[in-house]
Length: 313
Image (tube, rainbow, N blue to C red; front, side, top):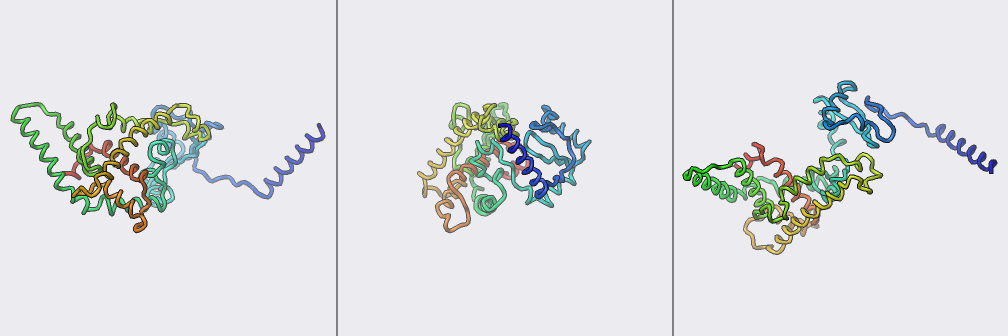
C-alpha cells in the first residue's frame, strides 16, 4: 500500500513539473489594487456605502483599480479620463453587462436593451426601437393623444382654481406622465389596482430594490442555486406578478387586432413578430414583454425628470 502511494505521489509530482515546464503560467498584468483574502477577496473592505469605499481605495491605488469581490475579478474606474477609455475609446469591449441573478430572474434572460449582451441580438433590438418604436413619425402620431391628456389636466386645474381647492401638482404631473406612457406603449391607461393588491408602481419599486440588493450568488456563482438570501425567490415572485400583467396586455392586443386606428408600441412589436422572415428582428413574445417592462420601469425612474417631461410637452 505504501509503495502504491509513493508511486502515485511521484507520478503526480512529475506531471506537475512537466506542466509548469511546458505550459508556463504567465502572471496577468492587472491594475494595482488590494490583495484581499482567499475566497472572499476584498469584500471585507466594503461597508454600507460601497461607492465611498471605492473612492477611498482609489486614492491609494489609482483611477483604474483591480479588486476581487468574492470570486469575481472587478475593475473600478474612478476618474473622468479613465472612464472615457472604457466608455468611449474601448466602448465595444466593455459594452456588455455581467450576467447577474437579477437580470436572469426578472428580465427574461437579458432580452431587454439594458442587460442584453452586445451582439447581433442587441443591435437588432436597438435598430427596432430606433426605427419602428421611437422614430419621429411614430412619436408624432401620438401628438393628438398627448394634447388631449394635457388638456384634461389643464381643465382639472382650472376647476380646482375656481373652487379654490388645494392641488398636489407633483402627484398630478406624475399621474399624467404615467398615463401617457401607458397610452403610448399599451394603448390604454392602467391603474395600480389593475395589476394586483400591491399595485404596479409598488411592484416595480420592489423589483428595483431587490435588483440593487447585493446578491451572494453574483460574487460566489457556485452558491447561486442555493439562494441563501432568498432574494431569487422574491425576485421570481415579483417577476410572476409583472409577467401576468404583461401577458394580459399582450392578449388584449391580440384580441383587438385590426380594431385600432393608431397602433401603440405593443401593436408594432406583435406585427414585427409575425413578419420576422421579412425583417432582421429576432423578436418573440418574451422579448416583447422584456421591452414593455423596460419602458415602464424607465418611466417609473425618470418621470420626475425635467427633460423627460419636456418630451411630452
